[in-house]
Length: 574
Image (cartoon, rainbow, N blue to C red; front, side, top):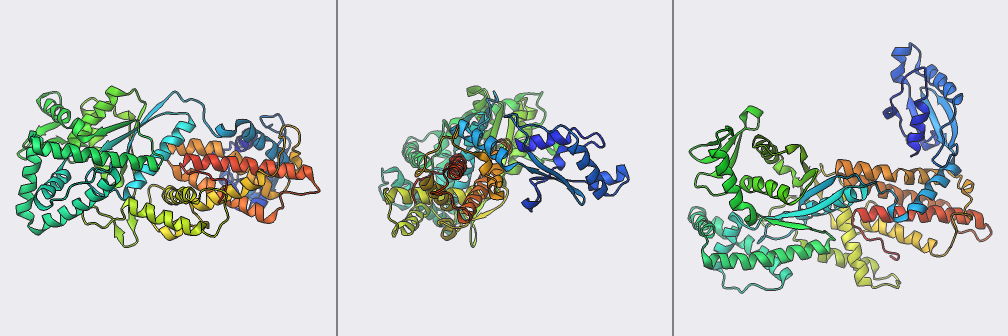
């Protein structure tokens, strides 16, 4: 909001055209709230940057000042300092406009107008019959936050998941189950999920003992499954359904909402039929049959050869992805179809989108949002090798660590529930704070802490100010004297609050929850610094107290909204 006011001011300058993107926020905020460097004008104007800065500053001072939405002048100072023009805003006017906006919009502060655009998001694709581990959670948590932020920003969002419930890993699991174990599987979904994951790891180790012999046996299991062997299909369906129940219960624990759950088995046959149809269509010259597979020849587009079907007409990932794209389009009317899939599949999606384009699918709607992997301190996780941290292990350990943090605290809330809230905040924020294009190495000890860059630190900040706000009542319409919020720290907090709607839109448009995570972390730091330097409740000064409580209440509300966008609960006590 205030940046737009300053941009409007600079747009009135006649001596030179000023690109609004050149406006900076000074690192030293005592220099001002916005700054324009004038180096780039020197060549055109044939003057020193410092001279240009002074001339533009003089011109600005002679212009009518732009007003806030409430019709008030918010500029306090315009000055040239060497090659920069620095703009400082009036603290009281900034506070009045910002706090008024937060208070009047409250739960919808920062929300965007209806964009009349629909975003379908596909995410959360762990395999059935394998161990659910913390590496899977980056996809789930980033995707849910992307959906929530987009919805808040004004998009209609459709949340879908794609579960890998068939294929070689299922055949290996069933092969081991029927040949090497006489165990009865648990019927409780979570117990089954853990047991099933362990079975898969044992199956992998067993298969490596006699690789060639067992490979043929596993392939035979897969062939029989695809041909509809009744006994194997019964085992597959029963264990598949229990796996899905476990995955869905994990969704609920993480507050992840799924509207449509697609399964590989649901699109396999239709994908095979589509590829056969492409091959028979003379107009689709890029789809060809080789000795070993049906392929899309994409070498013309520097995308090499995309395998579509095996030579024996059995399916591949690509087969099912083609069918899934068409199934989504038949079920939903969307403007954006977003695939949230790890960076390892970048090339696959380039090939997939090009193949769909060449078979007359509208690919301008398709976007692949990739993310880097979650690693252990000693390297990459692998379900096959058993080098993972199971989700349930991480969850249980995090809850216990949170209980340890709370054990000496006197609280009027259920400590078990609060420990659970803290544990999930630690997990979510440790993942969402990082840019999706960077690898993450999870560290539980640093994540489950009330200090530094953690979810519990943000929750603690919210609870700290909840205790202050609850002690004082004020009426923002009449009691608050905004001119009393004249400290630099108060002005900077208000400016930060005013930036929140823009951050929401930027995060939604760029699919970056990390922008929200970094924003709320900066806000919490500013608030805690303010708490340390400024007494908020003054017994002998009601007006100043009203103003400061209005500021922290507004800040607390924006912090709460930011945490909600990351699916982190904001407790009133810690």
